[in-house]
Image (tube, rainbow, N blue to C red; front, top):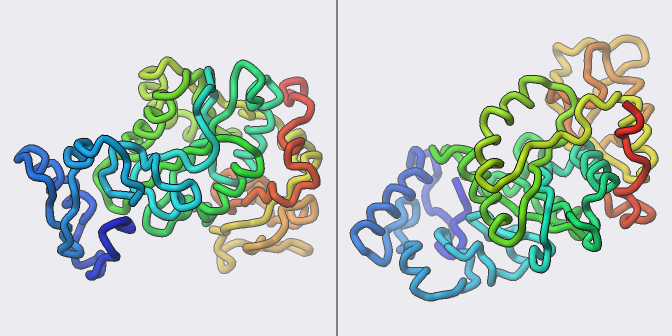
Length: 324
């Protein structure tokens, strides 16, 4: 269940109100159809202003309202990561930008490597014809990237250090609003400011993941005149590893899904644990059968770009296209 910015914290446990996010959506729709200015929040009993009411104001009030139709544009950038309920810009600017690539960003090493490759191929520099905009979906309640256990504030810090725009898309627990529709809202926000050329992903080799994106995100891309793109798809792990070490950006383990009771470790092998440095030594010690990049969800990482000697150069290097 979401944190209700501007409505106070819920007074009831979310389990007391099944699918409360959907309930709110229904009440909101009913209130709008009836021409009502507000409706009662089922969790707190507080009154919540409808989108129609907020539109009459003509501007964002900066309070992080649940139905803000202005993408929280007057909530300070410092506060947005903690307060937004709808897709909004969390870092940087989309003004005076023409063409962009939108990179789906988890905060981990694969996303970072994809950004490096996009940058080397001619994106990412404001002075070039195309820049990279990051888009991150996160759990509205925990303010973390799902499965990655990466805090949204850490993702914002990454974008600030890398000097790239970041759009955040909150996902509300147990809502019937599909993930794809929330993503569409975020993409639409970006498309209102600039021309999107490609939706980009840091997928490595899992065919079923790529197929899911093709089946579910192609229409969204086409609606804004874009295509889907996989900049590091099937690049050999040896090439990706060398590129990561060359970047000078340390990556730590942020989450581990391997079960220590069922994952067998041979001599000299061990499971990674949270906060371990992802390094050649860690990779060499992984148990047999564990994907060394964690591509099958065995573990996840956080790219600590703020620890790089030169963060401005961390996303540059020789194009991987020459290595595969």
